[in-house]
Length: 178
Ligand code: SF4
Image (cartoon, rainbow, N blue to C red):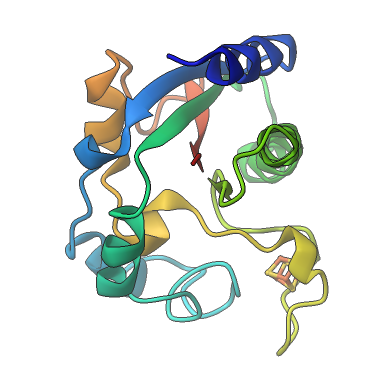
């Protein structure tokens, strides 16, 4: 691990995030993730950060091959006492996204010219997306939106993604480096 990666991990910890270095070649991209977006997600078509408004999976697969290193970023919450989980999740992922974005900016300043954050969940910087993105400087897509199997990525570092458990909610992002 390089000194710069060490520094990014240190800053992630200060921001309340767990961070793990990953060799990008181990990140699996699967076509089947698109099924979960297109058939069953109530937000399908509504977010400019998600399918069908983002690049297709094959295009992303090619782009990912140009990266060598990345950081898996995780922020964990206990939401079991939240009266309105959906509202709380919306707030959490926005806040978490901004912490992760700070790391992307920091990585860029450290010389990782092509660094790019894959954000936790769909973008919710605005109440609803307009036809054209209102804040393109914040537009990032989640890993799942381009076919990344997040459960498998978490397995690589010994983390677990638990579904339907309000006491263990995780915001997960991937910061591509290089
Ligand atoms: S910045 Fe606003 S318009 Fe753009 S993708 Fe995010 S929520 Fe949608």
